Image (cartoon, rainbow, N blue to C red; front, side):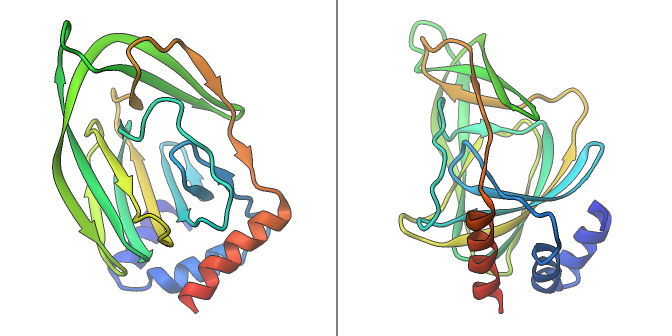
Length: 205
């Protein structure tokens, strides 16, 4: 199903049924995302994509080498299937002598993420904090720094729809002195993927 098709399922209140059907399909393989969740990529067509993001302490997760604060090169529509998710906006201000973080560009490829320091240094503060629960849908424009937070020990899953925004870049805030590096994307094996799918299905059934 296309991005537009999935979006219509969400706005018409059929997100749960779509998700159950999508994860039951053959060939779904979950990936550990550096931001700490497990991603099940389900649809991809050019600059549009649809994934299910899963947070669960029962799955081994990757850790960010920069920070949780990032912005996308694409516009996000996120629908909470279950659990609680906080969308924490970050107010980022350019700074030099009093900078606390450096901006890193993230370029993703099949083998992982190439993370490169830019010359831009910044400070940041917590801005608007939005809380969402099952059935809620929220949006986030490209280029807006934020972090997605699930309460410690909590279980949550969202449908994430992304549509590329020309001219935007994937960015992350990281340590001032960190250098460029490559972070591989690790796929879950068949057993772990089956466990991830079971977790989602058990919450939605």
